[in-house]
Length: 167
Image (cartoon, rainbow, N blue to C red):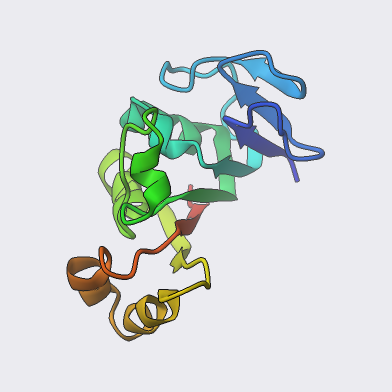
């Protein structure tokens, strides 16, 4: 299974092809993620990993369309990003966007189109310390009510979203 680790920095996933805007150790493709087309063939990858990267991307439409283009049918894309209620979301001045639970599926709906992807997993992760338990309980009862009314009281840590590409 050919894997692309997008925005991996110097920590490319073992066995994966690394792409970043700088030539860090382990990076095979040096390219700005905001500029398409990426120097990658159509349908080349079966898995794409973006761990704490999407919040740094200026051109979300370009990035989303390029991910779709380079992925084969059935490819899995794994996103991990801070939830907007997390201190990590606003604590890093290089974060351009602050994501809610539905943000990444909405990007695919807007920029790739309906019927061209499937959400496999879309969930919030909590740190498991302090009052997080109450936030987690509310989230499990109603995701919408959690984000609308309780996210700032009981902040989540990260969003984990897995998308399957359909072609």
